[in-house]
Length: 177
Image (cartoon, rainbow, N blue to C red; front, side, top):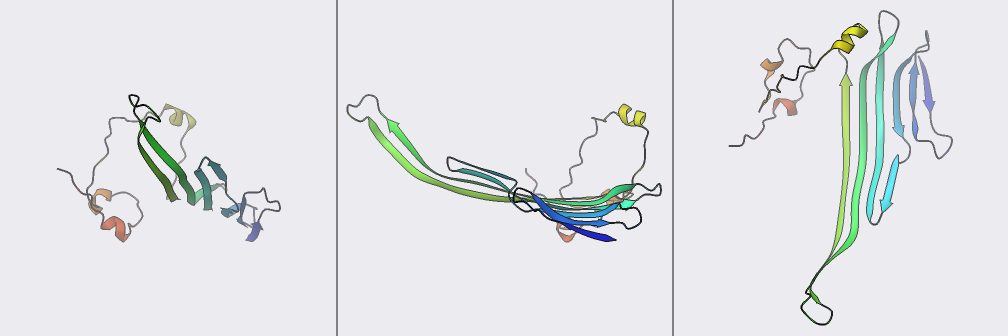
C-alpha cells in the first residue's frame, strides 16, 4: 500500500490529509482529511460566524466485480457563532416637553456558541437494482415512526445493527402527562 500525504503549498488552500492507495490497481483504499484554515469567516456589526472544523475519514472496500464502494465514513463539522454588541432601548413620551425620554435601558450582549457535529456511516451490505426499479420506486407515506421511550433490544431482532453503547442502552425519555 502506498501512503501519500498532501498539504497546501499556498496559504489559500483549504485541506491537508493522507491517501492510502492499493499497489495492485492504484485504487484509493482510505482517505483522511482535515481543514487547515477556516472555511467561512463572517464578521459584521458585532456578529461573528465561523466554520472552524471539517475533517473526516473514508474507507473503501473492493467488490467481487473489481469495483470499489464506500464501506465506512466519519465526518466532523465545527461551527462558531457569537454576538458581542451593545443594546440600548429608549422609551419616549410624546406628551412631555423637552427631550421626551422617559425610560432608558442599556445593556451589552456577549454571547458565544461552539457547535461540533459528528456523523458516522457504516455500510453492512449492498444490492444492485435496475435503473427502472429505482425510478419506479414510490415512498410508502402511510408508515408511521415508532415511539420508543427506552431502548428495547427485541425491536431490532432480525435486523443487522451495530451493538449499541451503554448510553443508548440506558436511554429513557421523560414521558409527559
